[in-house]
Length: 343
Figure (tube, rainbow, N blue to C red):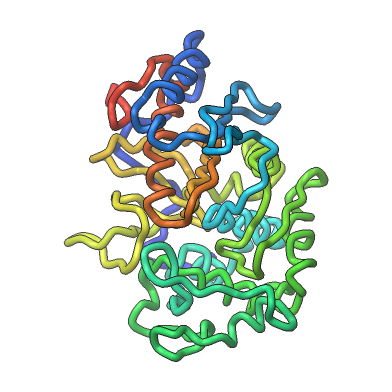
């Protein structure tokens, strides 16, 4: 990797670190938190799971929708921005090692490339309609953003070098630095899935690398297990090269859907804001409420999955519940408040 003043090899945080080893009360505490905490009750119905490299250790479906149907591990859904982590894992498998990431890879995968004209959570987002002919990444990039009349392939010099949450980073990276650009949408899912494991297969609802994956919690969990087991290179990339994301006196950044001072690493977030007892978990919440994570210890993964209307607030709402379930698992103590306990 190239030398950059903002790169650091290891992520440090001053919040609450994951315990790494569950207690005898972890399962009961996690179940009680998922069922009874008000922030979890607010996002029902949902499915949740915590597991390790061997598989699920605890899971449950909480609540039902207006038709009386629960969300299950096998429920198919759009995972929205949780797609980003899958694309990052795909690129790392192609590169073969973290050290093989180029400067360009890093710029695009932590959204500092300046290709921020497609939109993202919090601003009008571009889409890549399946009706396009062909319905490919490269065709999508020729479409114009109605807000400014510029193509999705436009690189904005004012955002280059700074975090700006936008689908354009991943779409343009795929076009410029992978062989995916001209694939028809029906071929895109198998192409990205294949390097992630023999039991992994998902599709794309549109040729949008940053937000188009359509899959089940069970399939996404397999990818997380492969990361935890270190059979995917992504495990070595968790938390590296983080950039700040929330504009402040100490952080120059642009758009972010997360109202906390997290950092962004290689196609995933690092939940390290000490003001909210950030535990350093790695995650990729999506705007429809899908929330996958891997603990800072890299020993356990988790998912909170639900199907709802897309908005930045839905991903944040899932985080507020999911990180409480995670904290209950780590400590064996039921979480009754709005933030993970600080001890």
